[in-house]
Length: 291
Picture (cartoon, rainbow, N blue to C red):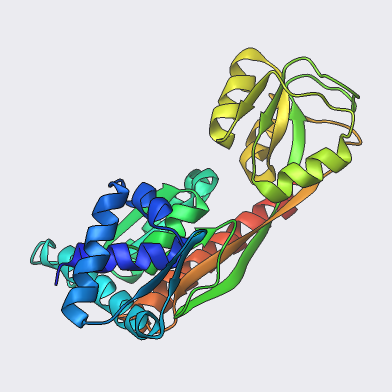
């Protein structure tokens, strides 16, 4: 039995579709079908009921799901640990929502170096959906997410709520309609909904970006305005390079922490969580002091 067969099985269960599973795993639909068929032949059980609008797990498929998840996670853990140098006893992998790398990754890595010096740490940055898949498959031990999804054996808790404010390179008040130099930073579905309600007359912006750091770099270089995480723009406000736009709506963006309910190393997980919460506390204190 091939681990890729189990991975295909899990992806079909996740998406409810052979085609979507193929797209997620970057293979053809026929490859996914062949892998599922091989599993069904080996187990002598039908795992999916194929329907016109997707695929549904059978009773046997539901029984297999938990074991397949455990097998894939164990394989990924073994693969990572085997590659470790001899002076490390383990590895801990953290996934961070892509717009939070600069604020969270450096101080957390420093915390781990001090609190778990014999553990190799790995940090990757991506969007919520791929982070959730990696967390499910055991490629990550923990992830900071915008849009978490409940999964078996995963615990999701609120991590921190951040403030997103409108800043400009020139002092100004709130304006209606198209604003010259405005860069729309896409902070996710919740932000887009709040933004539309707050600015119902706003037209499609000339420039939209998916990364806050890209938008911030643009307006600092060329001038303009945009919505950014408050803790990321406070230094520029203090230097006079940016200004809060008067009377502009303020948006709140919650982030969540996801991790396994039964981790390979409970004490290591506790160290990592404690470190992240210390980093979040420090960021909040900096914001409060600067207001």
